[in-house]
Image 1 (cartoon, helix red, strand yellow):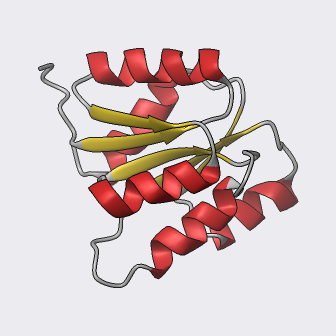
Image 2 (cartoon, one colour):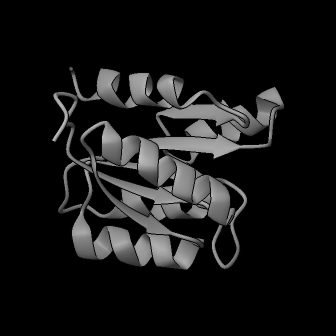
Image 3 (tube, helix red, strand yellow):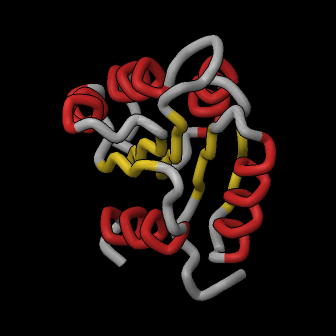
Amino acid sequence: MSNHQTGRLLIADDDANLLAAYYNYFSAQGFDVRTASNGLDALAQYCDWHPDAALLDVEMPHLDGRAVARRIRFVADQPAPTLVAVTGLAQDEERDESLRSGFNDHFVKPVPMSAILAALTRRRGH
């Protein structure tokens, strides 16, 4: 385990190559990682596992990332996880909608993984 260990991280993206790259990078940084390839699976993983943070693609099949974020925020009996949106949606209105949906951060693809790591660790107080 790396000295960057920061807890449980759920990663959801419908791009299998990107999902694998995220998994490899964040696992190497010390995260305990689980993945999902669509919004419904991401929500189920969250409810079963209660990760400390989630990295969610906004535009996923079955349930988009913003709907997942809103539902996660609605779960009253759990501590609030750090939620990071990663998307191709670059307009200011898109960023504002992500933040209103409950995301802590909104990144536009392609995003350096180090920037996502910094956001995750900053939120956790590391």
